[in-house]
Image (tube, rainbow, N blue to C red):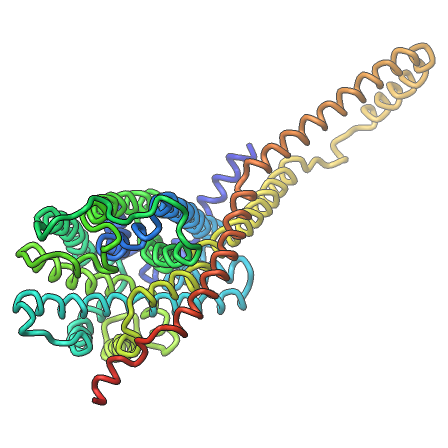
Length: 514
């Protein structure tokens, strides 16, 4: 009965939420199916795992494989629990759907208050904004590479100038809305990613330049700890979808299927990346470059790959930056419809990203900073922390709901008893007390037996609770949080020295001054 009342209450709360917020247009727009949500996840991963991840894995030797599997497994877990947080929050407070433009911050406020919400919002904005800079850099460097390869070095425009051209091209794309308005872009982006992988395989297989040694110079031993940290940062960056995950979920038709969308998206992307990494390691070994395309020979497949990579990075930026754009527009009071103010805000952010890319043109360094320092809390620390708090709130909600139902069903007035009933009860009590002397020994044995049985029952309950705790999400969540804190601190420490020692600061600005 309690379970039936609990389910009925949940349905009632959802119907009330739909009535309250239906007029705001939350249920009138088309929702994402599982298929299109998976496409959005693949689009967020983009081509980086195909063209920019192989070098990091190869540099770690055989240890690169378990490192990738470990990080991705943890990311799947935290993505799933983050999606569950939103589902539970909607059940506990249907009015939270009004905050669907910034769901991660809404969950932070729901669980730990306003200050946590502000912290998460700032962290999200920095991560999403910084995540678009490697897109710009790789796209611009690819176009420079294309010009040099096609003309055999005679025509080569610096990527510093290509950055400006890409900025002009990106602005109209960025004026689009949320992921549910980008089905076509996400579909095209997934086709492009698949084509890039296939064309890259063709280019590697068609490389006949000189002799080669399979898996050249790839170490079998444990790589330097710094190399593992750098690879961790790049992997975390390239497979991080948490800033946009909830934005996709709130636009889904069936929000509980977000875990499946993440799993399917990761399986698709990892399949393409694994084949590319293996072929690159076999053909080039440790000679592989940070961008695989830079080591490939001149061919029609390389030219097509470069163009498609550039196109996909631009399309991915439109989806990936949606959460940041929506939040900035809310802060500045911009309308949710297509307006001139939206165009100005989003164009300004695009050009600010171009400026930073001109100042720091090392995409691998930017990936390491963002992946190791900024995304660590968003991936490994905050989701399990919010999830444990959300489970506590759900438990309190269930207890209060059951208590209210049990109170209503067990309210019986004392006036229902008649005087004759009271006399009968009193007579029974006198009769029982009168017979206590003759049955004293039997009652003592029964009490001992009942006491032993109760002790055994309590002990069994405690054992079950201990086993449940050991195998519950609490232990797993705590382990993930500890790992996230340690990895974030270590990676941040390494990135500080890496940035200080790099010699590529102000390269584009210095070129222009000369």
